[in-house]
Length: 446
Image (cartoon, rainbow, N blue to C red; front, side, top):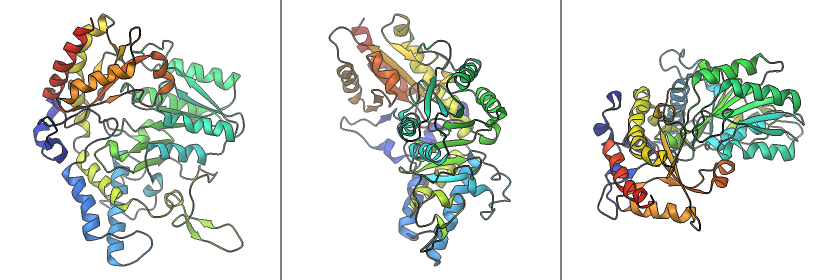
């Protein structure tokens, strides 16, 4: 199962999976797109910080502070290597004092803050265009409309392809054609910002398609920046920012076995954020004056104002250490779990009783299986979702319902919506349990 993942052994590392619920059953956690469960190793790393060296970096010079400093630098290097940031792989051994690689990785609170850091840090001319997809999370939507109000930029949306059907796949040729039309007829495109993996349906844009877009955008004069919302991709598939040749990327640690309240923003060129619309203060400067502008620090310190989430960063290092030797095997494991649910429910898709979001091929959306139950006359989508949640709660099955922060796509569709999202600790037996509960409900609606 899962191309060599020892899931039984892995599950032993997750205390939360062994807590019985109100019905005396162990939890079945299918809400991993919202947040994942931390293993013992991460919990221990966070606890160690508070128990052994609860201090700060960059303020004091005592031994606790020095220990935290080295742990934080080690975590930053581990994350840089995990996404193949420039210079990280070449750092000799565990050389934490290399001067180049740390500049590319900035710690933020979450993916949302990372996307906003880029949005507000770039210099925008009035009329310039940012392009997103049609099924983006609100975090890759609202920052651009904020800038439309304050800077006069133009947010534009390009569909996945000529068809906007629920099972549509990303067509890079269509995307670039539409981009050229917008650039010619609307205004100069400055940035393309897309999810690498979509939280709505799990669909992942192929590396080759991202590379095609990046090559085109970087061939323009002036170049067009390319940014990825990688909240749903970095935890599930190997990501190489240099091979993709993207300019920016943001992802969240709580979606990859780590603590909450921490994210990472990747900057290909740490000097391109010139506007300074981000917090400033302690740690972001090398010197201040009474009568002139401060001397600002270089990246990453310039963007990491004040005391940071030291315990979370150390926990992130432990999460990456846990995932590092497993990340190649996560995708096939999830695809098999997704296949069990997809194939069991496909007969209901074929009759129109439910609608699967994303392609039928589970390899294109391995981490997520989302389906809709269209409402009938006088039915309320929320009540349908509550019915399904109620049935599954007796088996302690947890998953997400609703619009998944993808309002423009979801709200007009007027349907109940169920999203199962898988991770390395989920099992086929858990999938069969869900299927055994949902099938009678769907049969009742025939």
